[in-house]
Length: 480
Image 1: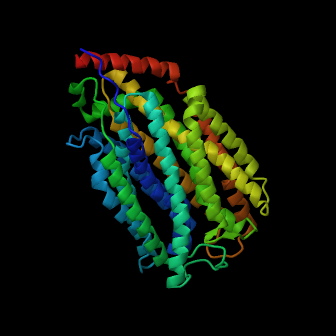
Image 2: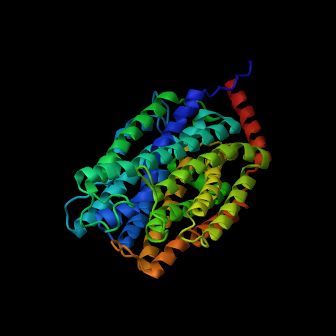
Image 3: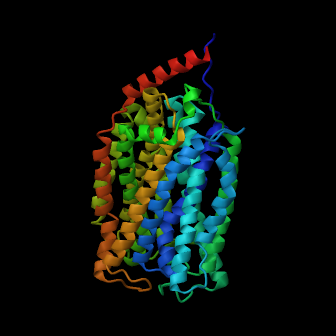
């Protein structure tokens, strides 16, 4: 029997796959960059309350990821195992995202309960759609090189979505804030010319507009992608949940990559979560380009640099290997983050230069992580005969959420510990110095932990070449 030709991934399909993470990232970046600010300066929570809520809700949500992975692995439909959830989850994803940015007219306890409920629901529906989306990478092509390309498209569009969010959100919030009245008594009393509006309804309307775009992107991702890779032995696709979990627990590369991913996300989430405060309370230069304030310009530049890092990831990894590329990128990010602490409040140009360099490093690691999770799927299938794509990819989402949970919780707690006071035009020296630490030394610690973890990762390029060849032989035998 003639050998089947490997299916080609069209450019449209690569773009369609990228649209999925573009949608996810548009909301995720709002959560990472603005949600803490929204809860403290618009909604009316204290930093400690918001930090504790992030930890509690995201740890609970992280537990849901493996459950969703197990469910999607056992889904069978005319659209495949993972694509149906892109169709079913698009509208709930957008709707609950908007509800998260509604400020109800409740007392403080009622508002705190509302925040817990809506944010928990948001993270659960994020799991519903994002775990199957991530798993789709493992079944679109059996080729590691195709996966590197798809992963790069995914992350390029993810950062593009984040850039689009920063491009739109602050101007929209300020526009509707101006129409509805600049601020309420919940928000801070800084100069209206150099900070984002604190009108609650302006945030709700602006997020609703972005939510519509997110739903459309998920529908296109569903329509333009295909599932191709089938398990080597379909009979082993019907195994118990406990069997799948047992195999995962004994998969040492999975544990190593999980640790590296959590540490990398802690690095990102602390820097992202405190950036708005850094410019509001430390940087002494107030600048505005059209409708964009300096913090938004800083964030947009970071996303553009992330996209450059994504573009560099595949060619550098093909030359140095994924493991070495990841370690070097984290090392450079750690050094640059430590140096960031020495920047003065009037050195805006240097602050932006360091943001570009750090963001290039950060942008290069995440496509490598996703591609390495696909390698772990192949490795486990060869070792056990079981292709638990959804369960293994759910761990990538779990590490993402755990990293953000710990990073966001630490950010909120430290702001409280450093005596940050919402509403003050001038913060205490301890609060300002703490904010500087959270932009530099603390993220660098996350980088170092990630480097230590990845040094133990065993699935290098030569090992994965052997794994891929052995799986190809097994699939060829089954096709005959």
